[in-house]
Length: 88
View 1 (tube, rainbow, N blue to C red):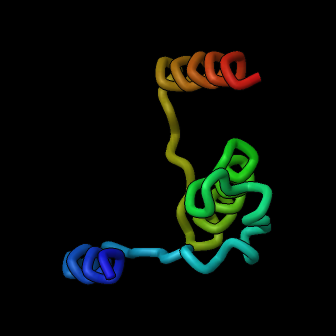
View 2 (cartoon, rainbow, N blue to C red):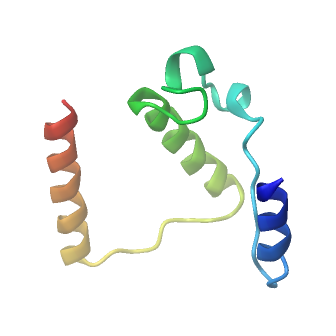
C-alpha cells in the first residue's frame, strides 16, 4: 500500500519517526460513526478529539511545545478567534 511505501521512504532518514494511526480510532476515543464525515476523514468534532489526543501523545513521547514570540502568539490567537467565529 501507499502508506507503507511512504513510511519506508521517510524512515530512511535518520531521526524521522512515523506514527501509523489508521487503526487507532478506538484508542483515541473516536467513534467512527459520529466523528468521521465520510468514513475516512475527521469531522469538526473528530478533529477536536484527535488534536487533544495527539497533544497528549506527543508530550508522552517527549515532545514539548517550543516558546513562541509575542507576535506569533498574537497571530495564533487571532487565527483561533477567526476560526471559532467561522465554525461557531
